[in-house]
Amino acid sequence: MTTDEESGTRGDGQPRVPFGAALRDALGAPAAVRLLDSSPRSSVWAAELPLGGPVVVKQLVQGPGAGERYAREVAGLRVAGRLRPPVTPRLLGTDPSARVLVLERVEHGAPGEGWEIAYATALARLHAAAPAEVPPATDPESAPLPRWSGPDRTDIDSFLTLARWLGATVPAGVPAELERLTRRLGRTPRRPALLHGDPCPGNDLHTADGIRFIDFEQASLGNGLNELAYLRVGFPTCWCVTAAPEPLLLAAEAAYRSTWREATGTEPEGQLADACAGWLIRGDALVERALRGTADQLARLTREDWTWGTATARQRLLHRLEVVARMVRNTDTAPAELGTLCADMAGRVLTRWPELRPVPARRPHPYP
Image (tube, rainbow, N blue to C red; front, side, top):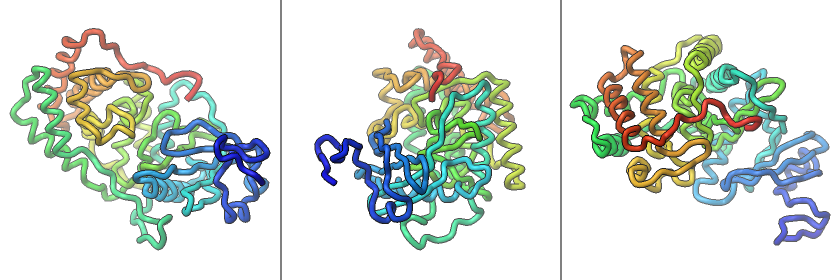
C-alpha cells in the first residue's frame, strides 16, 4: 500500500497510524482511522479494529522525556486496569519500540450537575488501586512509578519574594512554616496512592458507566490529597480552572474520604490544607506543561498577566491565596501565620489589579 508522507495519509486516503506487525497480529488491522486533537506531546487516532472494536491509538511523540512519559502511562493504566468497575479505558495493546498504546474508546458525555462528587469518588478509587508495595521492574514497561515530587526551596523563595513585592508583611514564622510544609508534602504516605498526575477536565471522561480517566503520562505514587486538592485550588495543572461552591466541595471531599476508607481500610494521611498550600507556592502551576521549569512564573506575573484556558495567571494566584487563607482559618493543624500572609497578599493583589474577577464557577459546557 502506498503512503503519502507529506499529507500524512495512506494511498487509500486514511491517516497514517503507527500500528506495527505485532499489534496487527494481536488486534487486526485498523480501519476507519481519523486523527484526533491532542497535545503537542502525542498523536492520537480513533480507529475500528476487527478484534478490539472502537479504539484510540496514542503515540508519544519523540522528544525529551518521551520514553519516561510512555512508561508512566503504561504502568499507570496497568495498575488502574485491575479495578472493577473500571476507572480507565482498557489497555488493549502496546508497542514500546514506537511508544504506542491502544486503548478502548469510550464515549464522553457532558458532566452532570454536581459532577465533582462522582469525580472525587472515581479519583479515590483510582488512588486506592496502587499496591502497597510496587514490585521491581523486569522490563521498561513495568518500571515502578516514580514518587510524586512536591514544591521545594526554590518555590518558597519565589513565593516570599512575590509577597514582599506586593508589599505584604511576611510574619516571622512563615519561612520556617513553609520549610516544614515542603517536608510534610515530600513524605510518601504509608499507604501510597496511584496519582494520575493531571486529573483535569478533559482527562475525566464522563460515560454512562461512570468516570474514566485518561492521559497518565505524569502518573506517580504519593499522597492522594495532592490531587483531591484540585477541586479547591482550581485544577492547578490544567487549562480549566473552576471554583465550586463550598457545600459541593465538602460533599466531594467526604465522598473521596469514605471511598478511600472503604477501599483501603485506612484514613487518608496528611492535611488537605497542606496540599492546597503546596500548589499555591508552585509558580509552575500557573503555566502549561511545556513552559514549566523555564522561568520563575511568580516573578513573571509581577510584570505581565497571561491567559491559560479559563483564567489568567493573576486570577489563578488570587483564587489560591483566598482558598489557603480560608482553609487555614478553618483548620487547627494548618500553618496559621501562612494563612495570615495569604489573606494579606490576596487583599494587595486586588488593590493592585482591581480588574481581576473570580475564576469561573462552572467548567465549559457541554464539553469537556
